[in-house]
Length: 486
Image (spheres, one colour):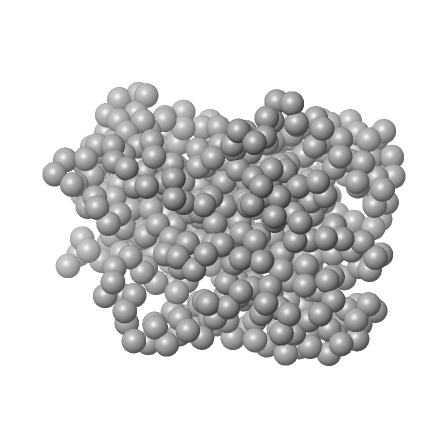
């Protein structure tokens, strides 16, 4: 029986483990933390429940396939529910747009501030769907780690159709003119940790996922996905070993043969790294892969706020945009510092899941984009300053009495993300997609120098987001099985 060692128990690692264990492999997951889930975690305190990490869930079919392909029904482990409200977007001019699959409703709300943009919305959504279907067919469901696959003529034709050389913001401007609309859809670049003013137009496909397919919630919070994956993995015989930190990947004759941990050495036939691929190359491998030339993705600064108040203007997902959206990305990527007036995202999951907060209380997961860890920002000094600015900004936006009614507060800085998850410099998605090379030549899922070493998760192909990292784990597992059954 082939032995598989997986470093990290994020969704990608768990998905790989499930698929390989179902096919008869001996699978062990080594997780350095006390809980599984990677960046996706749960915090329960003072009667409030928060999910750390990803909260906007799309592509439900990917999660379904994890269970169905293992002879199970997802409904026996996990319950999704549709969010008809989608994401509520607040703009500086007082405009509000609930972005959701109700095309007429979205069109009407855009028309309140720009009739011209409203006229272009359906055409934009149609072209966004085209980008998604091409990407889903040719990129998202394939491992592209060798040149033979990359030079496939059909792939190359499809590649050109997803507008890899077109700037995302410039592409949006071919449909829209108003800054509200440009910011609302430009924000999708941040879903891959990048700037809409530098990333390629390809990521415009995400508007289709939310605007046509819709957004989902998960009963018990998004961490329930992790719990369901863990339960299935253990049912299939996967060993999940917590509090086990991998310190080095053992390589012999350019072959990964095992790992060295704080608890001893383990041998393996195949090693799957579900840790940040950049961190793996920097700290777990004894070689130089020129990481100094890599631009990391966005990091984040988060607040977990338990509030003895309800805010009627908030729905499940909420975004407050600043007047000058571009300044945020100039600060983060050009000057490597915290923006003065960042976009603020709030997940208010208690809006739909009444078990997440009390009847008259709110559990607000507040997230703003932030630069990666560097000498430019001393988070020991700046943590409280940034916290106070965000709370003051939200109070000015109508969340009156927010600071007064706080009964629980917890912060998470880029340094915290780096320490807890092992993310390279606290980046959420590995490297950014702010250039053609980094957008389309991510770290391949199969190491190009060391045999039997694989990568899954948001820092490798096909990218970030809960369904996409799950997909990466499934694809790698399928490839390993195919190679071992030839």
